Length: 296
Figure 1 (cartoon, rainbow, N blue to C red):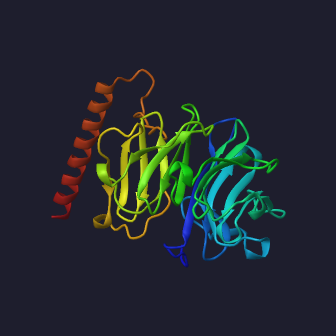
Figure 2: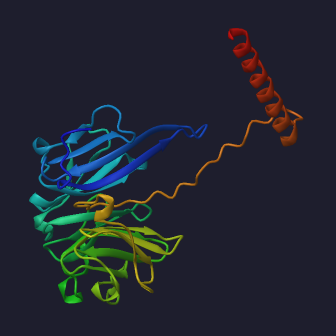
């Protein structure tokens, strides 16, 4: 893969589609937004083939930033930072994208996007608008501001949802902190991590491991992880010494590791298989020794 500048890839999303009948993986794709190229792009997750621009400047894309997928409904959502818009298009790039919310809705420099498909809601962070907002996935109605500068919000970037816990988490870039608030906007947001308890400078993306009670974030200083409730101090997983230069987006994959059991013949025990393997190895060694003697 060539021609991709590390500093311009703002959003990334991995998609694995499975065959409903046998559980066999049919397609693994990675989708990303490129703020300098003004594109929403898809490629194979294994890096094979060439990436394909689904939507570009001629489709109204400008400084694309956050990205999120609604695979069941064949939709990809992204934020156009340069146009103060949030758009949606077909996953295969067919048709033209639709603008769901724009400056007329008070949007200003949207970045991270997260979806609640069950309730047909979309949440996003507005960097310059200094807001955490929510709107309908179909763009109907007007978006609601959950938290803004009056709640202490400052230049939010990445955003993630804990739907079961009713929480929204976000990373504040310039303030260099991680915050959490209620999904319905009630109460005041809480600072989980900042300079006082070990958070590194200038954070961007954020991702959750709700089952493990962990929150991960990425910034100029590297990748860190902390407790979901903000207790304790965060741990640095990777930093500049590992080759990180300007990391922005982050995503987690906690798929179970599948271990393939050894092949067992019908009625054969493990001891029998081990003895068989030993005998075959001895036979091979004897045969090799005889060949060497003949050549001598």
